Image 1 (cartoon, rainbow, N blue to C red):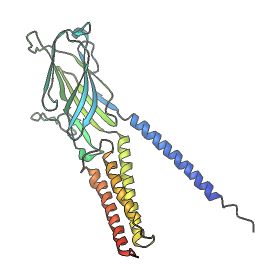
Image 2 (image 1 turned 90 degrees about the vertical axis):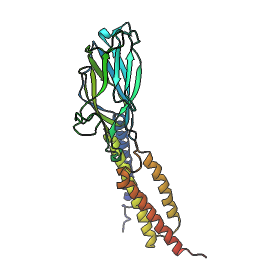
Image 3 (image 1 turned 90 degrees about the horizontal axis):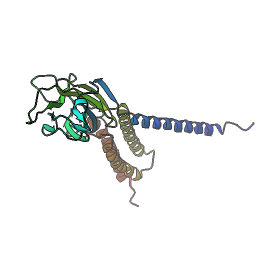
Length: 310
């Protein structure tokens, strides 16, 4: 009988699948990098745009503290037309920010002040970090006249972010109308932001909704799935030990102990990781830890039971 020529095919098939796996991983890696690089997207539902005779406000979110419920905006106040002369403010104005964290803030800009520079302010921003990674944060009102606090309601409306008034030589506000404009800067990598802005009646009103971008959500879900797979592997290892399909060495319990100490920091390094107790913990992480702990206890108990003192 002629020798079989099929002996090398498994090796070739295996090599082919390894190449396909490497290519797939490379494509997935490249896609994830590209998605994250373009994840700080802004969707503007309405905006006054920029004005040529008034004050333009530049707004750029630079940080979002989910636990403290505040967002920090980098702002730039740019006078245009009658409000600027030779790079200086030609009129005195007062800018009031009712929803600055801790207290309202009022800034007076005197005539002759250089028209340059940026300022960072933190504003009240509401959401529920326990819903991570599907949490959503809102700067806006619930639309009820008796309530002026920001709300996460789906019917939220813009809140006055900046109230601008021209002031006279005595420092008193006047009723002069000031055209207000706005332009947005990039910021908050990994977040998708929806803006609704108006600049009527000397008020720059803003509704800002921020939520994790699709690439971040996908990454978190993949990590959680891998955690669940690791827990399943620990259960299978414990089962093979108890059913005597494998010799019971204490190495399995040691491996499971290492797993626990490796998964905890992995949980805390997820993008914008929420405080302990979020739904990802209740649904996935705690159960992963419980499964590994139970598996480790089963392996240890079997090792103690079957250990040969001699």
